[in-house]
Length: 215
Image 1 (cartoon, rainbow, N blue to C red):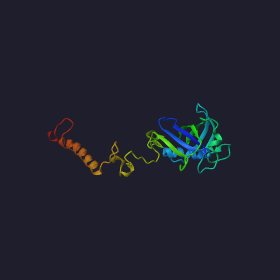
Image 2: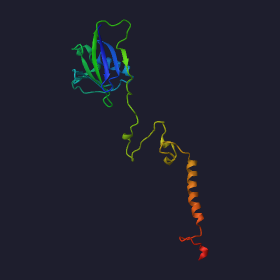
Image 3: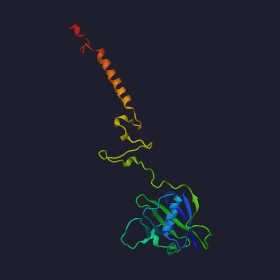
Image 4: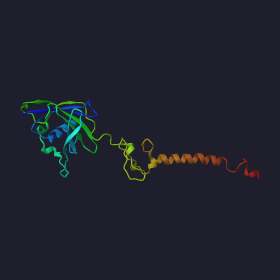
């Protein structure tokens, strides 16, 4: 059985490279899953391959929609299409988009056709892996995406602290540090003492500094 060796790169991270061998009679879904076996991503997200030219222009679509029903609009499904059905060029290219909601785009290029598979190897097989794939969902905390002030939300800082765990938000410093309520109360007492002592020192005097005993 012939093998297709594909070179897979992220469109925006060209230093991350995977090479994958797939049997010619295997499907686009098999290649889809093999790519994410190599990246460590959860493959159960809507994705599509597009037949591409040398400029990576999208052509015919071959899609994967897990756990979803779709109306027939003439789009081929990955699980039903063998790779050999769309290999017309010894350097055939596919533009591949993974997870439409938070997409990663890939360039998938056929590098060579190997006439015989290796005995004892389970295909698809990742034969080369260079560079670490970026995190599947990126940074989960985006300060520009915070809800409006009148919306309910849970805000956790990078240390895992939730301000709602404090009895009063006034007990949280700007750095997210929880200040003991006794310390706050003590600080307030000191402030009151400061002003109280000032008033005490001037007790019995009017605005001109004269004692009431002078009248």
